[in-house]
Amino acid sequence: MLTITEKILGGMAGELVDREIDLMMCHEVTTPPAIKMLKEKGITKVWNPDKIVVTPDHFVPNKDIKSAELAKELNDWAIEQGIKHYYKLGCHGVCHAILPEQGHVKPGMVIVGADSHTCTYGALGCFSTGIGSTDCAFVLATGKLWFKVPETIRFNINGKLKPGVTAKDVILYIIKMIGVDGAQYKAMEFGGDVIKNMTDEEKLTICNMAIEAGGKNGIIETPEYFSDPGCNYEKVIEIAGEEIEPLVAYPHLPSNGKDIKDAEKDNIIIDQAFIGSCTNGRFSDMQAAHEILKGKKVACRTIIIPATTEVYKKCLQAGIIADFIDAGCVVSTPTCGPCLGGHMGVLAKGEKCISTTNRNFVGRMGSPESEVYLASPQIVAASAIAGKIVDHRK
Amino acid sequence: MKIHVYPRNNINTDEIIPARYLNSDEEKELTKHAMEDIDTEFVKRVQPGDFIVAGEDFGCGSSREHAIWALRGAGVKGVIAKSFARIFYRNAINNGFLAIECKTLDENLKTGEEIVIDLDNGKFITGGKQYTFSPIPKFVKDIMDKGGLLNTIIDS
Image (cartoon, rainbow over all chains, first blue to last red; front, side, top):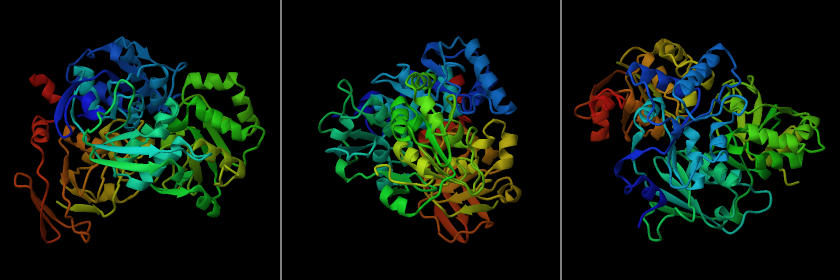
């Protein structure tokens, strides 16, 4: 009787395994150091250029000379190695949005990426986790990596969500419940009726933030890959979907969720609203924001970044971008940009931003004296119009 | 050797090395900004061989290995914390950077206190108290003894 994570990794919880990697994700911040390490060791060829996806996304289009050099290093290497799946500028996207979108993620795979939100892909029934640059270099050289098979915490989200409650609220609720290290080193397995009825995009939003509870991976079963009845969960947590309210995670932890009704009473004036990122930058997120913003005007600086070139194009074709612009929003080509305080929406001292991203640590989006509030696209869009944090259901 | 104490939990990698500096992967650049957003005096104060002491979940957040390089470049030998975030822990192993777990750290430890550490016997003394720490797992020791994961490739 095994959990889905145990099955895919090929070991019982607590065991050390050496696994072949089915897919490796590389972007321009964390892969250049790995490239340098390989060169230093005289390793000239990657194990399999067809199992690597290269996605420059963090500081692109190049925000300064140093970033340009990182992007160039990644580019030159991808070409030299004959990397088949290289999403260069013009067909680029935020890594954790573009990989699932382009069909690279399949159930049962073992996927690693040199980025902590690689846990996102587990939504589609694979084992997927983030690693650092040295582990990345090791995988690029050998196509394998060691793992300690994690214990699983199972979350059953039962019943139904109330109107206006989204996948983002579900994961913020869970992180609030267990804390930012509540799933440290564990697999977070999500199930129950609410999850079963979610779209792939909603599932991706949920698994994206598994790392924010310290999770090794986030995972959702598929008809083909599932946990055996009677398998060994470390813990099973039952959650009634109806219990979940729309939440805003206050600075400076993703676990600081507050009911939107109470957050509204705090009358928090915002300087910036951001809609995008690997958490909520997909087409359904753009549509959700559009429904609220269409025909209205924003009261603060509002930046919207579709997470991939295809999402951007779909939004253009659907007239969504024009409506965003008419509402007074800034719309950009795909990039991680503001999420990590990189570019395209950095905060000054004293500024507050409400954002669909996944982290709000001190200095995350710019000045260490700025503040980031995390929420769903709906709450962010409504708050952009109001110029302060408001309940989008009104 | 001295300790630098951050009695908080969840010291994260955005605080250890803010993303605005990630356009460089050079240790000597990164190190200038280690801990900048929570302790502007850190880089001036730290001496080679010093340790950071912290609460639970040290190194949480982003996978950036730059966090290790920034600390290592500043001369930090390791971190003693009540617990570690998993990606940071793996990155530490891969760099021979000590990530020592000690659940019983005294709340009253102060920055600047001397520390004496006995790795082989799993003990350290600081703030007038002796502590034992969780033994480093054998497989971790094996990787660290080789100088990091990449060096294990040459062997096989």
